[in-house]
Length: 112
Image (cartoon, rainbow, N blue to C red; front, side, top):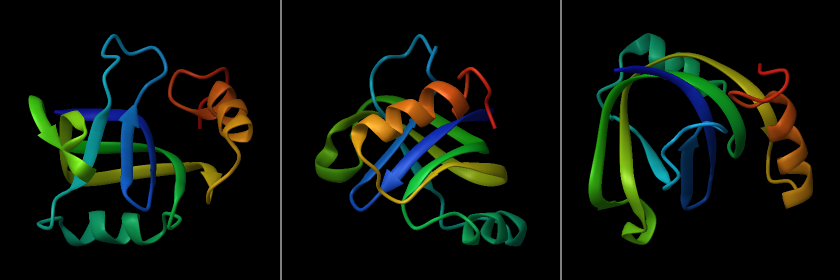
């Protein structure tokens, strides 16, 4: 499955979502250790923490306990990464992140 969505990530969190998705539960985005060289090169350009729109190919799993402290009911394991656009670089205030989301994330008013 190939998906274009938003990835908010940093130390101990990795949330994968779209603003108007019908799935309202959190999804953990896990990067497979078996990425191809091109995908690895794409990920090297992402910030250490932040929010990005990203195109990934992989497998979606639900009904489990995934991610940090097993607190995510869903997981998307990315096997290929083909594109990303930075929405927010680094950790920001919740208000700044929400404003960036409304404008630039997947399904926002002017997505990147």
